[in-house]
Length: 377
Ligand code: BGC
Image (cartoon, rainbow, N blue to C red; front, side, top):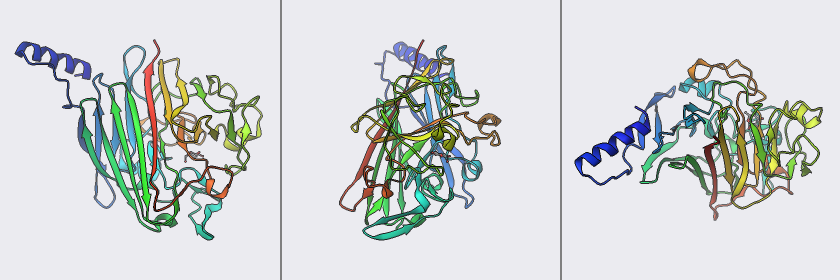
């Protein structure tokens, strides 16, 4: 039974029995077993369904969002994030699909940074650089999960202690990520972290979106707007050069919505380095505001992103190669999904002109990103 039909049935039954209509928290949240870690630990899936029958599914491995199901312009439900059906693929072949990435999302040059003159060396898991927190980043950890339900929304609080020295980062870091899905088809991601020793932090959500459906092919026709006058150019290993460059008169200009494909094949060194878009945009506002908006004309689905972070990584899925079979046994093609990762700038610890990613023991890192979904008829 669809969510809407279920609600109508409940409402009808209530009228018949003379009850007051109470569309409260029951039925928003369900749990089931998703799989097992190689050491036997259970991985649980949390399904959060709202009043209109839209849903998100999250697992406690990596805080991974395994599905987001939303109506298209005809009212048909579709799953708009790429992913897998099992733990093994998420551990072995996933390019961070749907995961929370940290401690440091994106790259740190040569895996090296210093705090108070002490140098730290991370694994160069994306040679010669460190990428997304290392060999066993947040995406591969089993998080503690506590689900919650209210009358307006439901969600899961995921928490993790990353011990001092985990993946060579200093400080014991306590992390909390809360996913909340409400009746307005808004997914809110709240991040919180504290440390007992100075460290660096940059944490993000790494979903690959295809608003026409995860198994519908390429995302080139999606119309993208990024609220940024500047971006951070990269070198040939995808590390920012330190320059803050204007987007004006370049293929990096998304101030007015345009199809992702429109300029992606332009002869432009930056696109050559990334094999397409794989860059950090410097958001125009550094308080909570709209960072990006994406519209998929075929399905009518719209995604808007709001954040308090200073940057957003737009990655056009250039390294997906059709070799990985995901959900529904679908082979994801190159550019079969895109990521919009709210973040601090890549390699910030090595750039004095980028806003600081240092977290000290007396402070709490807090951040919020909202993904707002709708349809245009
Ligand atoms: C990075 C890409 C990388 C991808 C998957 C993105 O956040 O910007 O360069 O290939 O993650 O690892």
